[in-house]
Length: 117
Ligand SMILES: Nc1ncnc2c1ncn2[C@@H]1O[C@H](COP(=O)(O)OP(=O)(O)OP(=O)(O)O)[C@@H](O)[C@H]1O
Ligand SMILES: [Mg+2]
Image (cartoon, rainbow, N blue to C red; front, side, top):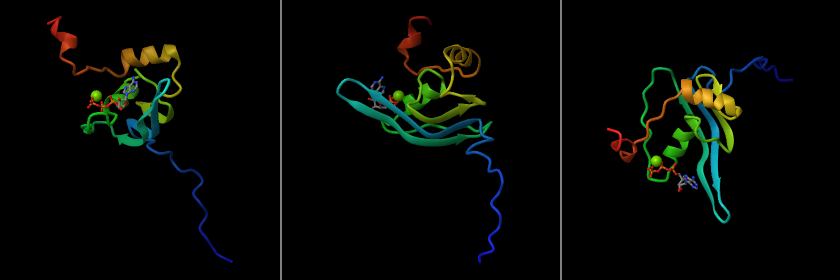
C-alpha cells in the first residue's frame, strides 16, 4: 500500500493575491452569420504596482480585453477580477459604480478629444 502525503486542505485560488486576474477568459462576438472569438481562454495576472504593455497584431483582442477590464463589455465565459471586483457577476448598478470609481479608461483615438481641446 502506498504511503502518500495527505493533500493540502485548502489551495489558494488562481491569482488570489493579484490585482488583475483573468482566468480562461472568453469573449465571443456573435452576429447573425458570423461568430468571432476575440478572446479564446486568456489567463492573465497583474500584481499591484506592476506596469505592463499589451502588444499584439491588429484584431488580436487588445481592445476587447481592455473593454472587459474597464467594465465596458462583459465576457462570454471565464473569470475576470480587478481589485476584488468580479466583472462577470456585476449587476448594472455595480457596473456603473465600478466604472465611476475603480477603473478609468482613456481611448487612444485622437478624434475623441480634438474637438474639445
Ligand atoms: N463589436 C464587435 N462585434 C463583432 N466583432 C468585433 C467587435 N469588436 C471587435 N470585434 C472583433 O474581435 C476581434 C478583436 O478585436 P479587437 O478590437 O479587440 O482587436 P485589437 O487587438 O484591439 O485590434 P487593433 O490593434 O486594430 O485595435 C477582431 O476580429 C474584431 O473584428
Ligand atoms: Mg484596439
